[in-house]
Image (cartoon, rainbow, N blue to C red):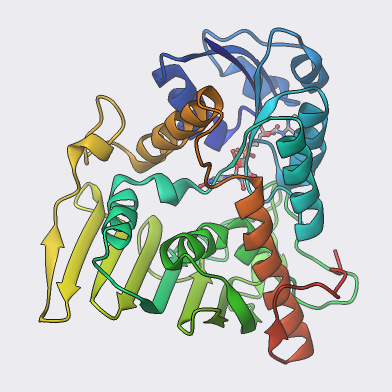
Length: 371
Ligand SMILES: NC(=O)c1ccc[n+]([C@@H]2O[C@H](COP(=O)([O-])OP(=O)(O)OC[C@H]3O[C@@H](n4cnc5c(N)ncnc54)[C@H](O)[C@@H]3O)[C@@H](O)[C@H]2O)c1
């Protein structure tokens, strides 16, 4: 039985992580911590500890789950690895892709598994899309289009999330929403094309310049990249386009992945409409009319259905995959810190491209990120 300690009992911790750990019979949630006593008091039936360090250093914990605000992800993940714990960490692990890679290397050297909150690769429909690609349905990938967008911050009266400060000393936009919000569609682009961009050009924009401040509700200037896009040329000759925005009309979670290849095409759309979030279509080179494909029940979490709320459904699959990785040391892992470093490198390159108005080559060997 794997023993899990969770840090951060906020909205996402309670909506996605805790239900997923409780659902997997191979593990036990042995302790939780949050720096906010009010948050802790709203978690029922779980053992609450006095500090994050208590969980990280405990000999009775095998896995640490970090669901706190972004600035503490790296610090907790690094400490957990140093104390021999497997780590699930929300994205981003760190703003700097090199530090993320370094942590991935440290975990591997210590024989530890890592996993990042790339939630949408664990939707049953996205998992089926990957199977179809691996079975050869698409052939050689030519074009990938990825969208991660919804209306979450279209209304300026909606305050920015607590714990996030996207402002920079030089007044330049940085890749903040692309990092905290767009990262999973970049992860899917790399997973589905099984390829990496060798160069890219990107644009960060701030479409809603004023936003309510948490607490007072007064509008203030908030220079955040609320709508971004980039084009990447893939090593294999194809290309990828990514659009990420939380000021774009549409429902949650708001992902669409389209892969077109030499043999066929697959489109997966994760947008909650009429209670269903996961939809998949295919077309072949000789049958170009797109037709819906069923999302197989075997890919849903145990006891789940297509009507289950997506946060617990997708996260239960994520946790199930992570627990399987930990229990099967020879299994090829995915969605880990290594993958997070590749995603972060692309995000850092998009920021550089935007700031310097130019194409940027990858890998970013010679560039020290600004953050
Ligand atoms: N993977 C996804 O799809 C997804 C979706 C939503 C949120 N998230 C990520 O999950 C994380 C949490 O988001 P949320 O929406 O739950 O925010 P939240 O504000 O509702 O909850 C965060 C909790 O962490 C606690 N916390 C913050 N810093 C801490 C620290 N240093 N030590 C201990 N506790 C600390 C806060 O008190 C709060 O209770 C963020 O990184 C966010 O980006 C990921």
